[in-house]
Image 1 (cartoon, helix red, strand yellow):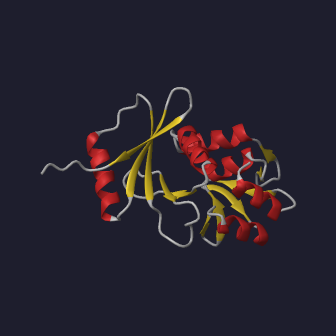
Image 2 (tube, helix red, strand yellow):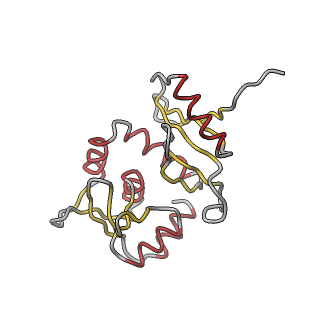
Image 3 (cartoon, one colour):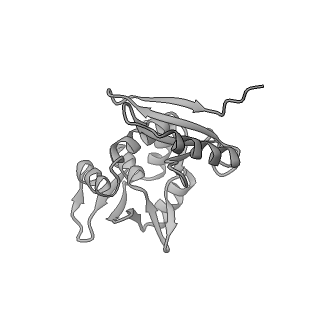
Length: 185
C-alpha cells in the first residue's frame, strides 16, 4: 500500500461499506464519505455519495471497501468488474490505468468531454489547484482516430491542461505519452 492508502486505512478501523447500483457504488457512512472525499474519491450524485466503478474496484482490491447488493449479498472483485464491463467495454483498461496512476501517488478524477477518461492532479495539489493533466486511455493495437485525438488536444489546450495518452500494452503495463501540437516556424 502506498502512503495514501495507508493513511486511508489508518483513518478507518473497519472497511468502508457500499451498495452497488447502476452508476457505481454508493456510500452512506458520513465518516467514510469525509475520509474518501478528502483523498479525491467519489462525488455526490442526487444526495448520494458515489464511487465510480474503477474507484470501487481499486478500493476493493486494496481491501478498503466491502461492496454489497441492495439485499446485503457481498460482491467480489470479479462480479464488480463484470457490472462495470456491462456499461463500459473499456472497463478493464480504465481500471488498470486508474490503478497505475493512483499507485504513483496521483489523485485521479473522472474525465469529461471528448473521450477524456481522467483528470489527474499533481501530487499534493488536489483541492488546492486544478488538474494539470487529462488522460485519454487506449489499448495497444486499437486504432485511435486522428480526429478524436485532435479534438481532445484542442479541449485540453483550451483548458490549459496537458494531454496524456495512456496506452495499455499486451502485458498489462501502462505507457504514457505526452501529446502536444506541432507548429512550424
